[in-house]
Length: 234
Image (cartoon, rainbow, N blue to C red; front, side, top):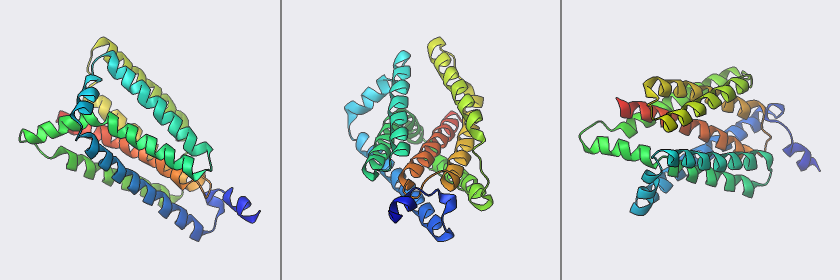
């Protein structure tokens, strides 16, 4: 009975020692998710048919179909992870999310690799360093100040719908969203990192470190996507 009550406590209701344990578990799972993303991507790049299929989905309405499928999978994974206290379901949700991210990243990574092969800079390394640096700085702001950034939820939701509308319009009507759209999405991803880190500090229960790591991973990969997009343009 005592364990059941303890497992329902929010993180900010725990002792400092238990909060540190929760944070360590969360960031460990985040690091493992990133490692799994890299491993899955390496496997995908060994399957030419899969690469061709992913590239074929970047044209016109097929790209919208791909985005729609990605959103369905990721929304399902996020809801499964957050609503369940079953560790197996949380791990399954994280696995689904990582695999979905690895698949949708294929075209963008291929562009970066082609630029490097043609004598350009190692854009992937640059994007990874910039993403990690910004992610670390934003996370530190929340962890050091303990400020609750839950007020960002409404703004992030509205901005996400606007961004999605622009992506759909750009795909249907054939116009390029341009550099400033990517810059705006970096700002959106940065806000999402503040929000997800704040949730980790204030909103999750003690046994939801896998779900917390999924939220952070989603924001991290969104940031990486648009930093990489900016560097590809330059």
